[in-house]
Amino acid sequence: MTTQNAFGSTATSRQQWHHGPSWLWLLSFIACAVADWLIGRWTILPIYVAAFYLGMVVIDLFTYPMLEHWRAWVRRHGLRGWYLVEVGLMWLGTSAVLIAFAPAWLNWTWAGPLWLQVLGGIGVAISVLIGVWAAGQMGWKRLLFVPALFPPGEMAQRYDVPQRLVVAGPYRYVRNPLYLTDMTLIGSAALLTQNWFLVATLLIYIAQVGMQVRLEERELRQRFGAQYEQYLKAVPRFIPRLTPVDPEAIYGVEENA
Image 1 (cartoon, rainbow, N blue to C red):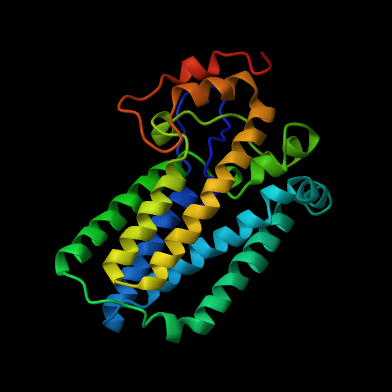
Image 2: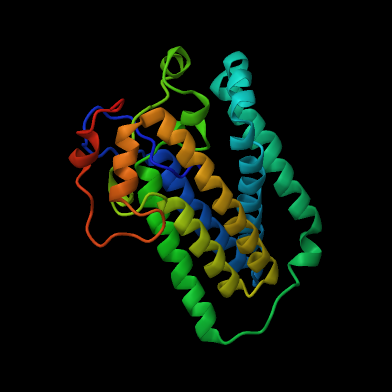
C-alpha cells in the first residue's frame, strides 16, 4: 500500500478519515477470498498479493532513486499523468507478467499443518484491518509517493496535494504502519496459501523496504525539518511504541527550526 510514510493535510491534529482507499483495500481481499472459495483452491489471493507487492517494488525502484526526474515529469503531466504511468504501466505491467507465469509458480506449494494456515489467515485479517486504519488516515493524494513528487509550492497547491505530517491513528505508534503490515500480510498470505513464491516475494519486499525507508526519511527531513526530526525521536520506525505519541508534541515544533 505503498507511500507509507507520514504525510498529511489537516491544519490541526484532528483526525480525518478518507474512506476511498481504505475500504477498497478491505473489499479487494474479501473479493479474493470469495473468488478462491468458489474456485476451490488458493489462486486469486496469491496472484493478487504477489502482483500488488512486486508491482510496488518496481514502482519504488523507479521513483525515489529518480525523484528529481519524476518531479520534472509531473510538472508537465500532472497528478493524473503520474497515476497513469505508475498504475497503468508499472503496476499493471508487473501484474501481467506474474499472471502470465502464474500456472507455473502457483504450484510452488508445500503441505504444512492446518494450524499454520489458520495462523496465516488470522495474520492476513489483522494486517488488512490495520492497513485499512492507516490508509484511512491518508487518502489518495497521500499515497504512492505523491507528496514527495509535488513538494510545497505552486504545484502542490495546484493539485491540492497535502503537505503536512500525519500523526494520527497508527502513525502515533509507528512511523511506517503500512510497510509493517505489508510485510506481515505477505508472510501471512504465504502461510495461508502455502506458496513458496510468496515467501520469495516477502524477501524481495523486505530488501526493497530496507533501502526505501532511508531514502524517504532523507527526503522528509528536507521537507519537514525539525517537525520530522521530533517525529523520528518520538516514534519508532517499525516496532510500535506501547502508548500513542501526542500529536501536539510534533506539530508544536517549528518546521524550519
